[in-house]
Image (cartoon, rainbow over all chains, first blue to last red; front, side):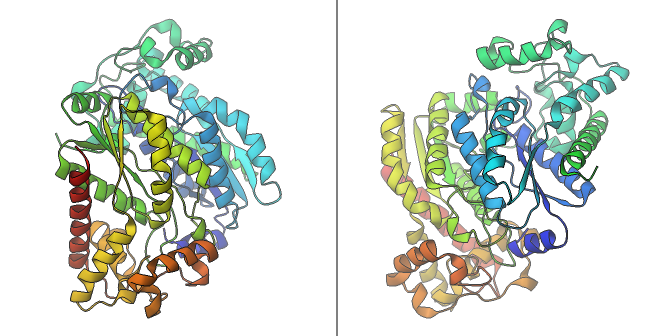
Length: 252
Length: 259
């Protein structure tokens, strides 16, 4: 969009801006390092269009991917720099007449730090713009796992990184960047993917690095990933995102 | 399979194999998210930056393109909605951390350039410090200040009867023509209007002074619509020539400066 289009959109009621953090990090032998960023654009765009009152800022990337640095092509910021980048995004966007600025993430690795830094960011701009934090992916993942279970796809196959679920979504968002010939099974130990174990699994992968859990960088099993299922998964994400944003900005 | 050189579009294995196979150079471009008049998108410098980096990497044959850095230094455009500006400190840290990541993956050389003039001075100023921090295993090379590019397309367009003030330095004939070549779907020629076209502003001897005035007083004080130049009548064929000449200049400078 041009600056005039952005100005007119805000004046016309698009007073919410979505600032979604993605990542540049390895996604197995079959998906590109830009996967989280491509999916953030795809899902963010659809959600904003459906809401009708939101615009999508350029996706924040790279972000926090230290746990993927064992694989070439991953980029990470230090958490201080990531915070400063978000601070500068907020400071810039607060000038243009947006009422609500919603911080979100399409990459789980950003969530913990987002939770920690958002209160300070919000306080700095208090009175200028309302800053919200919407962490839709955890809720989205629970629903996605339930949906896939009905289709006969187990939680460990669905996976949490480059597995059946994310690969199916990429077959919709950027099919020409998905190399199904190279899709291999990664970490599929059933116990790791039980809902009660997921937080521990996540923390361990942050501390020890993803290569500790999977040599090929895949957590899940992408084989047989399917664009039709991907469409439904994206729709599910968009739905959860829209619900959570509406609640946050008081339009729910 | 397409031979992409954009790391964002490659898998980690492809990147690993490319580095091991001799692609030891990473291209790191600093772009912007900033207003580009009523007719061009805020991602203009990012789009041109990706295309330039891709063309340069393919010509070099031993290079991959790192994710472009954007947003970056656009404080002087902050009066226009949609502009996102990093502070200098944030930009330098982002730049530095990109270099650390590239070193970790085994690149031996990083070529840095800008697709947005506002980053140029900071890049020149801070690359030596960053080079010291990343250490001797990694060679950093900052090439092609934007001033050289401007003077080059000014000279070229003058031969085609386009004045310096029409060619412009931001969203004028030159940049709009390049965008018409790369992304015509994002150019609204029906909204293109002349911005600042004061002849003296664009004289080669004054460019540095004009740029400093933009940085200090903001582009809005120079053009209400955010256009420095005149984009009307922009031409994709000329855009291609401007683009190719810039790629040539950058490639030549790299070849002259990298062992």
